[in-house]
Length: 458
Image (cartoon, rainbow, N blue to C red):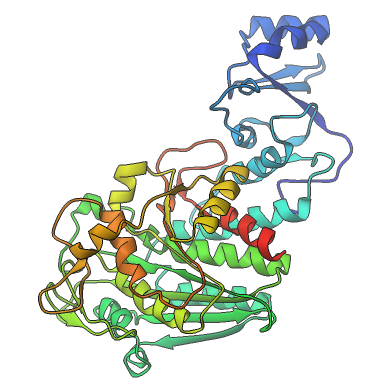
């Protein structure tokens, strides 16, 4: 099990309280505890925490405020605040929160601390899992999220293309997957010119990470993750404020690895392939330039409208390779556009697909897993905005409108044979801590897509 959990039998109860249940709960408490709760002004406000003493210097109960059951905006991850509030000890749920499974997962996600570079205030509170919750599934999801968060939070000096490849290989080896990697100038020889162009200016060679797992006779599911380990913007240089958290620009790759971890650990009946173009978009004398034109693996020529729209370039070559196998489902994830954040904010990634059944399934799974996603249109009239006067495509239209949509339309040009395609434009970062989501790297969309895959191929 995940270290946030234990099978001990002696545990302090956590009682969930909403405003509508406060009075009946207080009435049922011993007189001293009831008096203490009233003296402490405990109102059952969502997120409010109160430890009740037993008179001997220990806790007898913990009260924790949650939303009323009919509250439209109730946060199913609210219990993720508990590990940061509880003193060391072993706890159990005394009553049922809105969703016991998600509350248990939230407890594990809220226990996360990134401690690679300094000793952290790691929580030592543990939870006895509620009856009926599949702890294999909870542990699987929590471990995957931890891996993705650790990868994203690691700064670029320790998480370049080579280190990202090492992490992918370690995961592949753990589950017996077949791993390979195309590095440096071999990208040109093996027809990945866009990946090479974006990554060639860095002293750390660009590469295409590739591993496969599962029975070849099972449906092909291919995951493609943007692995830009640091994005300066290239010659179209970002301002310092825009570069500040660009270590997270490999968040798509980290999320794909987390999703692959869950798929392989659950032994889903798929033939999985993972493709990660891993590069650093650096500035040097050999950096690719605005108005340069490059061929792509698919044969489509691309004019560079902006070197800071590099993620779609590296994904294009990887998508073209993935598409050659005609997979049953092709999924790509990347931290791609600021336009997506302007439209939907950091917590609600947009997704794109022309498969209405797939879109409905993604929406249902995102809601059931509390892993929000929102469908956006692949709007055909905007496709003309990608036109170049001297090449087949321009990677960055000059207009300021619909940046996330045009990015999706660009990537769609490189997907032709896959039965279904799903594109997700994630942020990969929590700017302000929220329940179960500490500030820093975040694994977005992975649980929703895993739920989709486990439903289809479990």
